[in-house]
Length: 102
Image 1 (tube, rainbow, N blue to C red):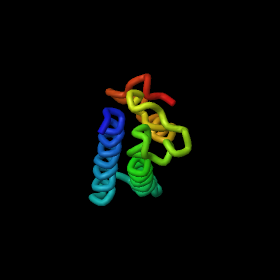
Image 2 (cartoon, one colour):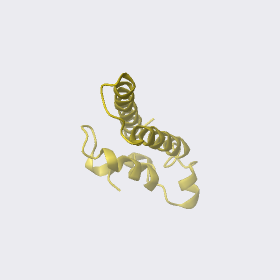
Image 3 (cartoon, one colour):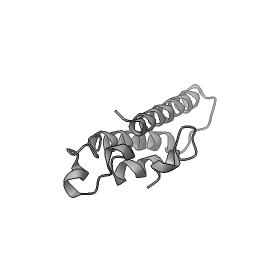
Image 4 (spheres, helix red, strand yellow):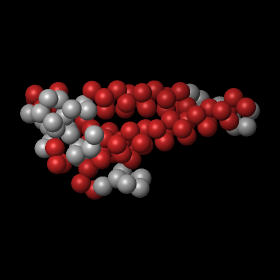
């Protein structure tokens, strides 16, 4: 597994943990309901996880984007444009590298 994929998985895990805290606060009555944004956040994390899993082999020669000729070389670490785009919401977080931008 490369550093970019590890970074993305770690960020999704952080998002999930933050969402769990918010949900627990709402359920305990310590915060007002967010109008569905917590549930939307969980769905977005699921989407990111599924896309990352689907494109985990891109850049290795056997991923879906490799067959389309849209993958980056392995040393690039991004794998493909889909993975690069998944990283954009995390561009301001520690550990994100400028070279991972699409």
